Length: 110
Length: 130
Image 1 (cartoon, rainbow over the protein chains, first blue to last red):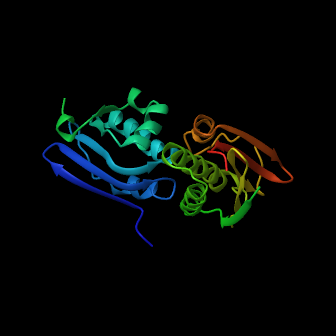
Image 2 (cartoon, chains in turn red, cyan):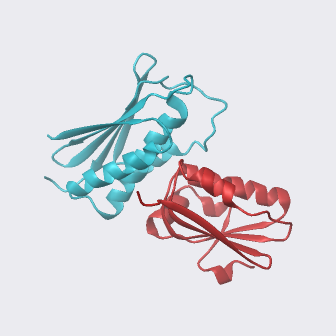
Image 3 (cartoon, each protein chain N blue to C red):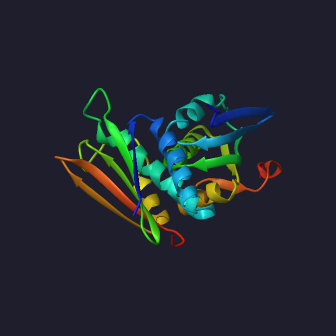
């Protein structure tokens, strides 16, 4: 059976870019939650949604938990905008009201 | 009216099986693009609700049933369980977005529940006429 979700991350100084691929749902959200690296105050975590093909409310919940953690530990969280269907779910859930969203990785730093 | 039915064990992996199934069925009925995405999301949310809530009083989860019925102008999708039925849950582990997302993406939906029979979510998606 083809792997339906993958997460990988890359640190470049204080920017950690996490690339999500495939489908983020109640089955894969625990893998996403567990895969993230340690972050320090001042770091920026950029979640790259461009290769994500599906997200459900469990995936939204994972992103919102990251938002809470970022505020608690003084690192920044930014989303790199997903494709049509994925971004539509995020927009309907108004995730952008809580988490800064940009079009490309080079916009992750303010 | 054609009808098909599937049953899955109500564990997290069931959402993928059900989502894959509804995509195949919907494509067979001519759905594409946004309608296909809407069905995949709504079925995922309905099945996830069963996984998270329906059998929380049991060690071994029960089943989740998926049924589709082709109507002249729509596909009607049923997600059923034989669990606890609707009940307040103060320790809910999710964000509470499942049913609101279904309400947003389905053309209509209804929840039927009783503690004797479990819960049935009925979702209707408009399709080109058969």
